[in-house]
Length: 303
Length: 290
Ligand SMILES: [Zn+2]
Ligand SMILES: [Zn+2]
Image (cartoon, rainbow over all chains, first blue to last red; front, top):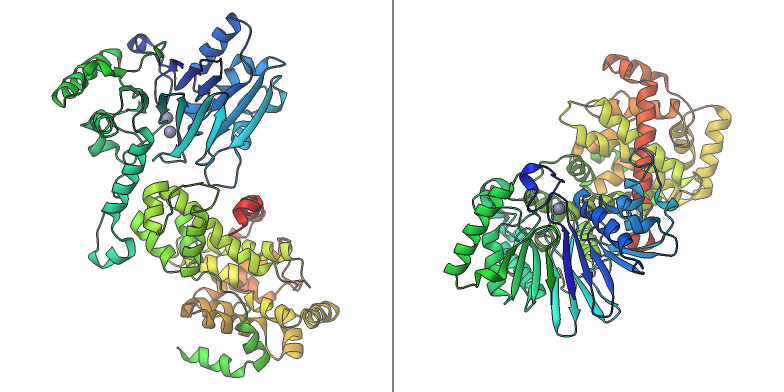
């Protein structure tokens, strides 16, 4: 598997002098299997450059398997700008979760962002053959690759993807916040029978998450926040901080971790400083700092 | 149990009383759940409490969480666990749509009336009630009162759809309110039957009262329901079976200072909300199979 990062920024694209080194585009990851299986994880604004790059090195891969972690803007906004969608003869399979709301299917969400108020070309006018499939927790094959999904903890239904090729495994979490006890606020002991042992439920959910990462060679993970930002200001916002990522890396015996979905306010310099903090903390915990990478646009990883 | 309850309970014909026991219950928490869907600040704890107060709804939510829609390999056995695992928004959305769906499926069984039109009438009245009562502490109650004010008609229809069809025809023929024809053919009115049903479902006294007095001036919520009911009729929102526009509703509206609120704009926004709700409820089989 060859993995290339085309967008590493969370929430909103932030081009500009402060983000030239790490990049300002929102999530988009290209995964190419040994037999040419072609997968894209999320189509944030990074998909624009990826599409142009694909056009410049024909022939275009087909089918293109697009897996969407969730339908928040930063993860789908590059779709209308992904050039292969406009090329006749190309097939794009779009798969991802839909939230239980007004019973929209994945296709409806994609149609919606291309309604005429938002975009001049409607989804049905795209020249490529595009199919949609709403995904739940499941497992499926793409050529010789096995793709397994699991729900993450985010404000909307979000799937993580675990991709295995022979004995090589990578995981992309999409957006994920550590599971936590949502019932602690204003605790009334009389309610306890109602809620039950929420602490144990959180532990079980976390274990399930860890088993999804377990033994992976590469995990690309949401790490929007620092340990000082997360518990105070950003709880319930649906993202993780790097101290959690390091803990999970050890607990799930992950070989290499790539921290991504950078906060839009994090400048290149701030990311450099954060990297030092992370590497120091990793070393203290006995993790090889070289195995903890900070995602950067254009980063290529082989496994 | 209060005195009003006793009075209509004894007055109700026995066949009506018997029919009331066959009707599946509507969530008594419909109003709370509806409000929860509109507000951001419900805490996870409060949400779980609200849903758990209705065991049927709780079971339905858990069944859906464990369905193929989520495909979870792991069994979710409690609402709290569902909230931890799938998030507050998910559980909220499921509960709200399930509660509304339950209500609709109940209203659907009214053959002499077009089910969809009748549902529109009920929802339209509920939405009008809520808007008219804005700022009232009882806005939540008003919504449910509007939604369920005609629930007594369902009792009649379940008991004898043909006879109810006859009641509708006769009221139209003679230009009288439908409840006169009901009284003649069923021995009581849909207000009485509805209040009886609401009591059997353990609804709160104010809600029972609103259902019982929605064609009179009444007190508390009842006059709002009366005005909203009439407004929907005048604005051709849905069909309650009753085409007679009631004079007294106009004076009630005046008394409550609601007359300026009864605009075409209100009718348009209600129609719009009904359309959205209809879209919300028109679900693929997988999701409505609860
Ligand atoms: Zn995101
Ligand atoms: Zn997100």
